[in-house]
Length: 225
Image (cartoon, rainbow, N blue to C red; front, side, top):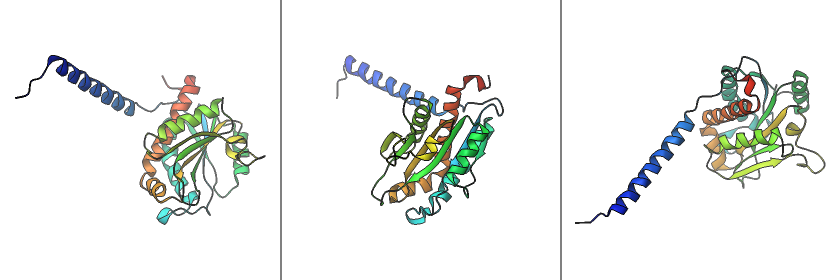
């Protein structure tokens, strides 16, 4: 027969209680309702990739096709929560639709892409123009939500102002609104490409939640009470 000491039982009880509270907190956080906004009080430009020639691993097809599938999940969620969504015409150039977004005066600009590097890399990353402002905060919120469902490498938030030497990454730079560009994962890597293809719906839901959380934090007066 084993003898149990009071101290051991107390420690076990505390561990169990902590585990229960942690699990409950995680569940509560997961079930937090999405922020709801006054109808059309805020607007967003949604910009899935137009890169038809970026072909992924196996059955991935093109970056353009897959990122538009993700945007097809994001768009109705945002609209349901009261956000006015404008979406790029993927047959146009990024210069054309950043100019259009600027003319419309949107409150937020969000570009959705997948990455590539000779099939050798994995990971998710988000680009802002420069750190220290709303663009970085937006990028961090996107990364926070995406890494809850993606368990590969977290490549962090990066600055795009010198991405191509003397030229910036265009979509985080050109919009007048706060903006960021997410590289969800690497479409030329077998593991990442498979994960994207198998998780279009949860990826879109995570990105939509991040957008709504960001807008609620930055524009609290637009949230429905």
